[in-house]
Length: 512
Image 1: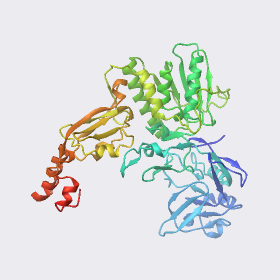
Image 2: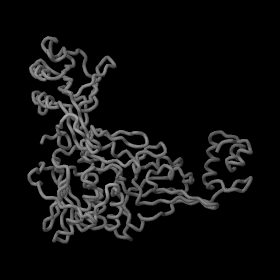
Image 3: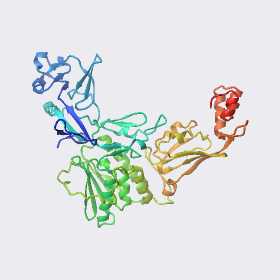
Image 4: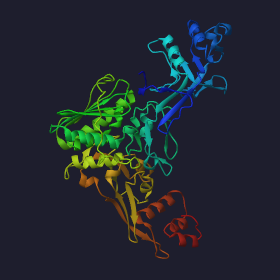
């Protein structure tokens, strides 16, 4: 099977074939825009135009319209191209005109679509073979189906909170640029997604996951396989095989071998879970089709994981990335080890990434050990709250997308609490803090520090000088009064900031 980007190309299907929610359909009538053609391409252009509409951009570079028939000649150059197979939009220089095309052949020196993983239907010559590019474009006519490679749980997505962007890790790593911000959530275009799974590896909460194989099935399979090995510290070898759409697990005397369609399906939560279940080492072998962005992310996450494991186990790196190999087609036609029914979760109860991570880390890290510093960008850590600067305004608690920070007050005290196991180091709290009292501290702490809430700030409640009701933390009132003075407010307004809302309105100040 041919490859394009991360996985196998879409499969041709019959017109009007039903496609479920787990699949994506492309419909192409073959209308093709050719960009950067030369006079030497006339024969291929005529041949391609025999059974479809072909539009040649910058026709002056090829010849007169009569030379191109039945292909169509157009004088303008193309300014931009966007879209995918069956739904491209071609923008022309010098006008707002947009041409809708099914296929685009880009023969220019600099590609108009610069994604590392280009959309299906966008064709460029490989090694300068222009004839092969025309042949590939000719094949993109008809109906095609591919899997919907991802699942998305917006309720645990940390992208945005109270209008503040918190986490954008998935947007940064998508080699196909299939992910965009949708305001409060992210939006993944299933037509552009080609299943590398980098978003799943990058996502700290598990809101984005590889659809198949599921995290629950892989966890069940690796635990079952490890239990069946004869070695005390078996090696788990995970191989990316882009031609399969489900995982295959094989148990040997001292090793467990797992084939997955996307290496990121077996992500960091499963590395730690396998090590916690008794694995001695994890070896990850990407395929040659893994995008560079995905490989860089993988190496960064492996480095963080090894920092954690070496600190707590004092040994060689527990996780290694092997050199990219072939697709291992024949070697991986093996019977699958089926997950135990007792360990499998119902489809409507997804196994959350952060739950797996925290449970595994609690096994691997010993209580009483010192916290281990991690590099910037890690998705584990704490926050440092400078008590002299924190005014307990509670902004950090309101914007925290994972409910890691909690603000509480009674009639006498206001307190700020932090739960380290939930922190994904998104930095929203630090960005919203009006006094700059919060800094991130990427690290991994032992279970007794990570689990449970700890107090990071406390302050007595200030009372209304007029009626005696509790109003706000004392530090917050002092800060608000100082800010009012800095902004040039007169003494009456400054004094009114100490009042409760009822007394403030009675004094003629109708704002809080």
